[in-house]
Image (cartoon, rainbow, N blue to C red; front, side):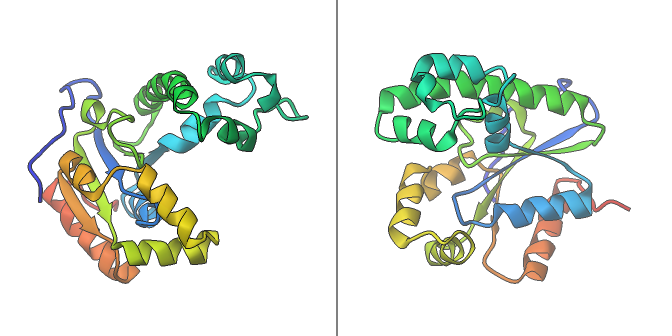
Amino acid sequence: MQGKKSTNHPGRFPGKTIIGVTGGVGSGKSLILSLLKEQYGACILQADLISKSLIKKEGPAYRPVIELLGEEIVGPDGEIDKARMAALIFHDPEKLLAVNAILHPAAFAEVLRLTQEAPETLIVYESAIPQEARFPELCDRILYIYAPRRIRLERLRSSRNYSEDRSRSVMRSQPTDKTYRSFCDAVLRNDGSMEEVAEALEKRLAKWGIRKKA
């Protein structure tokens, strides 16, 4: 286990525990989120899904992103075409930074709002980019989901039909294992059976005073 990295401000969300869950593509975060929701009654907040909701029509980032990238990213239905948007920013670091400068603050504000309004006392905030998602500012604990690269590659091939080149390209764009570990309070290895992973998760959460729902 790593030393505690989180710096949540006491009293920001009285009575609530906020767990950050992070890890690279193919590490199996979806399984962990499912266990946390089903067995622990957690409210699950996924940074990527929240960001996508912000660029929908009537979303706070819809118009700023269009003004930045141009009307050509808007599809026939009036929604931002995410494939067109990705094509514009993928090979343009300046545009990518500009889009992130819009989305990251807006997404974090939405996470704060949803955390405040959630009836659940356990909040799980998931992102593959914990620094940009501002985990240290919000999370009481940060859990890094780890799986060996060969298993991640196989998962991406079988579940998403990714080629090995595409999988490795996505992995290169994400933080390294060393960087993830520098942010975390604990590492959960996710390369065994679901039962083994669930047991390991239960043991880790018990050390943090979090128990399964009755």
